[in-house]
Structure formats: C-alpha cells, structure tokens
Image (cartoon, helix red, strand yellow):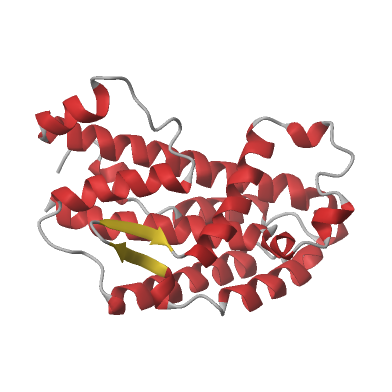
Length: 231
C-alpha cells in the first residue's frame, strides 16, 4: 500500500454521511432557505476531495514508476485541478495501464449503478431533504433510471472512456456548476440560468442529486481499479 492508499480507498459516501448528520437536527420550514447553501457545500466537498484523489493517484503512480514520473511531471503538470472529465479520464487510463488485471466487468458496473442509487437515496432520507427538494429528487430518479451498464467505462481503441456521451453531457453541466461555485459567480448573477437555458434539454441536469451520483460513480470506479493496482 502506498502513502495515499487509505485516502484514495475511502469512499466519498462518507461526506454524505457526515453532511446528513450535520443537518439532521434542523427541522421544519427553516430548512428551505438552507437548501442551496447546504447542498452546494456538500457538492464542493465532493468535487474537492475527488480532485485531490486524482492528484494522489498520479503521485503514487509516479512514486512506483520513474518513467511515468518523468512523463507526467518533467515538463510541468498539465492536468490542472483534475476537475474536467477529460483529465479524470487521463488519470484513469494511467491507472489502468499499471493495474495488473482489469477491475471492471458488467457485474461490477451494475453494482456501481445500484449502490450509487442507494447512497443517494440514503442521503435523501437521512438528511430529511424531502422539505423543498422532493421535485428535484423525483427528477433525479427519472434521469438516473436511464443510466445503463453500457454508459460506464467504454473501451475506445486503446483508451477507456469513464462515461458515455450521454453521461458526458451530464458531467459537463456538473463541471460548469463546479466553476460557478468555486469562483462564486452566483453571487453577482441575478439568475445563473437565462430563460433560453431554462428551456434547454440540458437544464434537467442542473440537479444536485444527479451531480452527487455522478461523482460517487466516478469515485467507486477509481476505488475498484486502484484496489487492483495497490494489491
């Protein structure tokens, strides 16, 4: 096991558990104005932890493989904060190339989808988010039911894509929101989504439960593959 193994292998579900425990004592209508602040805070914790995991995985690979160290770091770090799906896909393929066996099959894909759905449902129930969030949660469930095993980890020649094009569009909405939150652009926008965007098909992806689910799925994919690398 490497220096960062414990952190990398710790499921991001823990963030949702901690968040649910933190808000459970707040009851009644007072929860409604807290919704955006609470969900945005959880979202930023998830994105921040995942970005750090990506960097730790690269550092572990570089510690064990000097050629990789030269390739990834000698001419300067080029993956930024590892916040884009493209950069995470690069890290995932770096990891796959050095894992002794393939970690993901259809059975595991199906398990990841089912377990992620359960994680989000447990969070919704434990944090008592039905007040002010029921419609958003129902919308999430409709979208999530369309996700199939073939939408995760598609092989494209010598490269593995973490998500299908359908899920890429969902992640793109997540990434844009990540930037809005990280740079606090929401503070000076009267409405972050003009009417033309509200009518666009991708507006349905502006959903915290969907964002959490995508991040949890990515986390589970990396954990399962890293287990094979670190064994």
